[in-house]
Image (tube, rainbow, N blue to C red; front, side, top):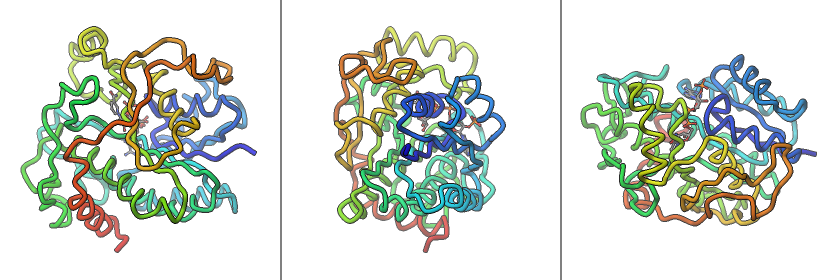
Length: 334
Ligand code: NDP
């Protein structure tokens, strides 16, 4: 029987490539959790996902009711089978917005989609995953100020949750930033990614010993061509991939980034919980898996995987605990 894996945001970029790799192995059944189900169906076909290796399901992370509905639909679909793996990958990045956009529940869009939607999803699925053997859960992170990752030089603005004054106030319109300061789109994205990584550390501390679930985060490298940068100007979208490729060396193709994220779920090397995985550049064209889904073995993989260290912003346990408690309130779990 295939292992069940949910991938959020599987209809584009990193999520799509990861879902494709996992579906083709024959070992996994992929639940593509997407805001636009028609698009998900279309791209799965266009990308040659094998019949019987996947299903698409509606998940709008900017709407907490949709998150709850997704969990109910997932449980009905898989009946008593536990969920084996969960990949929280979906995100929005809105660096040029002059004013905040809001989720249906009234949270600033990047924080609401990237962090709060996933936070609720993770909390609703932990008990179920605890019933699976060797369950793994990965939340995609990003560089948020650590200089020990290739590409880490391009870090402005820094993520900074402050004392979570914005969360303390409930984090809803008109409060847009976690620290309660005026809106700054690029920083809101980074703050949400810090919350993603802190959530992993907290999940690990709270649940790993009791449940055996392996919780991790990862930084895939700079996938300069994805739709994440859709709001950047055309010249930027032309120059950025080349800059990352030839100047910083942090560039990684969508395909290889997908293999990296799939590796975190599949590789025996990645059974340690609480880790932030990164790859030391060295992107290659020959992948870990051949296009027919057969593993090529260690020799095929590009870039060497390593346990990275979180930036100071992420490893601050006191703030992480506060972030957890406020987030629970914000999504209606306490
Ligand atoms: P994309 O924009 O290509 O993919 C993002 C995905 O999230 C899309 O499938 C999108 O759906 C989905 N999504 C957006 N909003 C919502 C929502 N409200 N509800 C449900 N799904 C939603 O970007 P990437 O592939 O680059 O990003 C994937 C992950 O990688 C993100 O977590 C990002 O932070 C991370 N990352 C990316 C880097 C890069 O260089 N690109 C670097 C470091 C981390 P739709 O298909 O409908 O648009």
